[in-house]
Length: 340
View 1: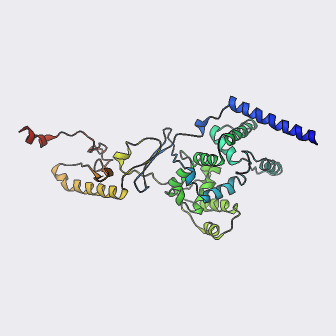
View 2: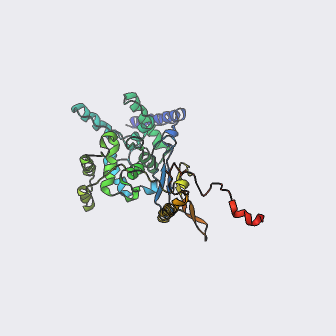
View 3: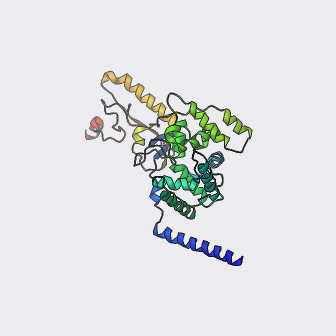
């Protein structure tokens, strides 16, 4: 008996050493999981002003661990990986259960953990036995180098949501127009269902009957039968593709940092100033004046509260994209007094 335990122990030590050697020879390609992010620009009240696509053309609004609510965790883990915090990247019981089920049924089920799914997202190789072995090895690497919460954050930032939309936060904003913290339980459940088959599960423009069915399939997998889950099952949701905001265009166009940017712009004041400028230009157009600009600054702390570079950013005829605030303008008659 002792010899068997000793042999098992030596085998485990040998496998651990082999893993460490292979981890050094084939290190994680972190560029495949830490992809370029979108630039998300907020006003002073945390409302989104503008979103720039990432440098490779994707909508990737980042989600941080502090923004992953308990509801998101509960729904995601119940649906995708109940034992996420117990296993080390691979769940052998799930693999055996999937093998047994697949041998006896025509329908195939998977056994990938969240960590294995993250590994698969990073290499996009064909689903062969060889790629599955590589996926398992990479899952071990992810578990070795990152904490569980970091892996969960990486998963939520890399999940596909159709087309050029990647990440849970991107989908929350694109399909519901809200930050992840404001999602209802029903909305969370639907978003969790999409990555299984993004092309099929996305909201359709004409018929969204499938949306609430998908939401309920996810909710039915959760053991919690409290009132809030029953309400979520009854709730009808209406996701749709929402256009990204395009506010304070002259200012927001200049900000491209591939990061989250918080400005001092007050969106309410910004809209009011745009309306005033537009109205004033209409009234003086007969005088041959077709454009105007203005900036509102808080003199106490020198914060820029509103920034309007022209009366219409999309007005090509009168160069609406030219920023009148920063443009060099001839002083004209202003200097005549001093010259005289």
